[in-house]
Image (tube, rainbow, N blue to C red; front, side):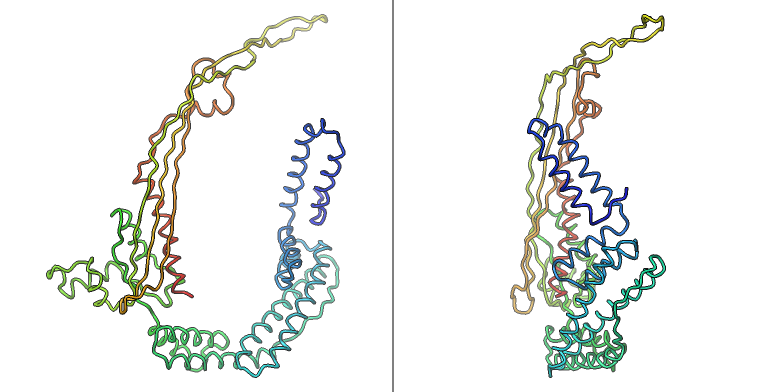
Length: 439
């Protein structure tokens, strides 16, 4: 189907305008045609190579995000080069993106503050990335379309060669400044800056060594105390929190695992002294924990409800037999004999559901101050329907034909429902706690 990306909206609009001219009595008859036509046009557009990328490029251009527009239309043209509208969009968006970056660069250059250097690197890298896309498309369009793309590409290698060491030095200097403050907050800032210095210049001075030192000093040790609530759910969610620490939080967070807790208890001889894992203050002090995570889990359950609707009458005219006859020309033919068939349906539906809510807080073990609080909730619903019938199955509607093939099943128990929620919500809980320590 030869439908170009630019023609989609026009085709749909034409259909709607044309149909609006019909009298009201014909509009119902046309509804199926309208819906089918729109779906056909849209489905064709979906399968046009590069259409999705071109559509995204137009949206980016309309909101003034020229960089994203260039990258999106570049992906589109790499898939399907013979899109003249895409080429035109590129030729408009690329100069606008370059002009905007150059204007920002000119402003940054006037600043005396050394913080300008990382920003300058980002601007030059963005210009370089845009130029790479244009350079790639020049060869593609020349080979596939014999089209000469005349967009000018700047060379920013000298600017980057100068700016990167200065950007690295800026972050290194900031890291040294923050390192003087022994608080974990400042040590974290120092580690981040030492890491950024190496982003601009690999192995810059002794930034890696200083990063390791400050990261270790900034790392928060988190003890997860036993949660309040149903023991099966609380144990499961707590274990998941301990075992599956996310990558986002690992840089500056260490979660004490169950194995480490057992080691602390055994090494200190606390089990013999009657001190268990529940003595979280004592365990926290011995483990060197900085923060303690506590939580309460509350569940609710909607009891199983079974609703029945009985004696639903069904009838339909169907072919009940066939009869042979000879027509006026002497040819033998078959005639279908139709008749009405009936059935009675008993329809059943069963439903239940559960919710699970976690409220939590993270406390500083040294001063008892609450650092973070939050809530998460999840739900799980069960719905099942089936039917039985008496009479002729041919009389049943398609829906009841499907339902009479189903048998009644047991609804899940509250434990099954809440455990299913727990498996889902534990991952969300991990991410939420990780976000507290990754910012």
